[in-house]
Image (cartoon, rainbow over all chains, first blue to last red; front, side, top):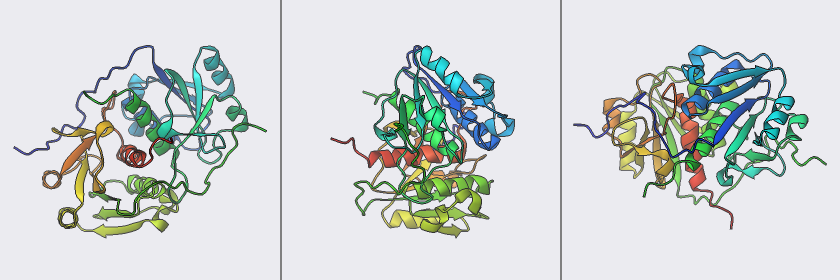
Length: 170
Length: 170
């Protein structure tokens, strides 16, 4: 019998996640619904259950796959009022961006109730949104083009979030 | 002065990487050059400098961006003979796939010379390729569609590889 046999699309993993933990992904108005749909698929497969979109956002089913089935998706006109509401509800507002005073994602510890705020592909997070944030996290870049695609960067951030909930087996 | 100001596309990070370390990304024939080009951009921005493609692969500059400038890209007809060559040269062959006997990426330690082997979007790594591998690493999935897009999954694996080279500041 071969050592490695396919188990593609097998039932999901479980972890020790305590139900009071929550990560919400909130996206500024984006250029590309392809990127948004990629984010929706990654978020859903990562067990995230709430996605906030803004502007003319529309998910493409072929890309988001069944992601949108388990994910609660809300579309708002703009992000700042939504972020203010989350802050009042006790969430930590964390932007993913290359900025001054950012923290390296490799060494960042996610709070138990976090909103991960994702900026536009070209222009990133606006000054108005940056001013609302508690933290900015940044993924180290080691080569050209000196930035990651927004959907790939979000995948890395969600991977790191999940990794922190998955302790080394004893 | 605002706390968080943009530093998009700033010069690259450096880390303590010893030059004898190397990760090569090798892709089986893929359905989508969009996915391949996304992988090329992420690999290059992650400081990977060698990408092996197979079949009718063609990078799309608009997506790969400057990725292909710093990245050495080779295109081969099929993957198994290339993998055999890497094994003879002392690389560990590591597939990214959902299989039996896989290891959780969250807890996997990359060897200093590794080839990360990426499978086709639909069919994954073939049995012929699986039989060549030293390890299979798998990313835990917590919701529908019970799998990640190949470009997002590769981004997560490259993030984890880089994270292991970026020790907590003392």
